[in-house]
Image (cartoon, rainbow, N blue to C red; front, side, top):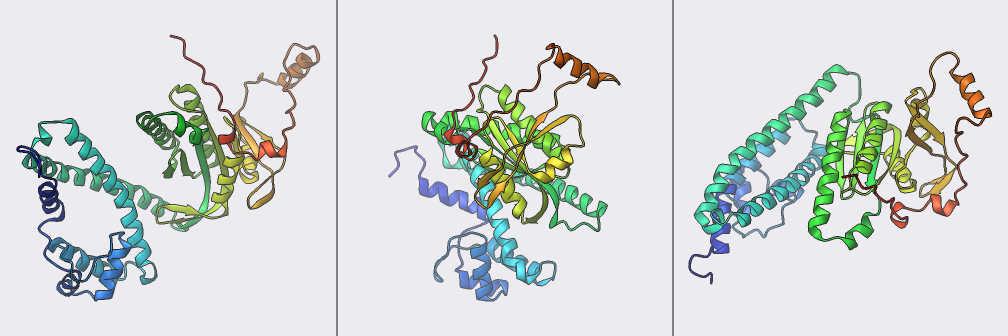
Length: 380
């Protein structure tokens, strides 16, 4: 039993459930289906697709809000707006995305409660906090959702002939070098700070260059961009920002261009697989691009694209990537090329050194097996 003045976990849970679920639990699953006028098997499929745990038929776990929700979902599915063949896939996607959002929000709430003794001193105080906070979170979520709807709707109206599910895009992966080793060397708090910083930088850079983050996968970000230049700038800027940030390890990146399938917020297809393979082949601090993207970027003088020797990775026997860097400044004007040639002949200019041959087993190694580049310390 809790000590005098201590919060009872059971009482707190019941209070929060009444606030969050819109009332007390008083119906079984079968009663919900009957009250909502939805076939029992259909209600079972929707519940599972949303990612909720399966419950026994006689368990009293549902509220009036559940009845309204099942009825509304069934009406939406029956209206013809959603093809019956994809209704469960749509429901799964909704459940998965909102589950992650809810997990983060509960963590935020619990941190607030545990760090503020006045709020966490009683069940009533916590209940009041949740009652005040919930409407504000709903407003923010609704605003963000509507802004994203407007952005995608604008694109659909501007390009009515484009297939929004299957289209040509630049796909990129950028991941931190030596992450596996890093997890064994630092504590949880420091690792959390590193991941938060990486996500913050990635979000800023992708937004600045009109890209879209598909997902963050721990130490890696998967993004898409509409143009070759936007994709290149995202990868280059992320690499430069990571090198300049003493709290972040170096990164490596892989980019590929072509047709992708965009489905329920994720992307699929051979182009996505190719970008992932290029990332696994890249050495620390380098950016590798496929042949398609390399050809596009050759038209832009601000980039330097160099073909690399063929490598073999899973699914690709002789993958021939190119490295991407910012172009070095060169003399301008009509005599620029002759001046550069004369300077090189007289030994007054440095010529680009020939790349050293790298064994296939090193080319194919993942960056986690290679030592990360040491960070340069800023001068105080």
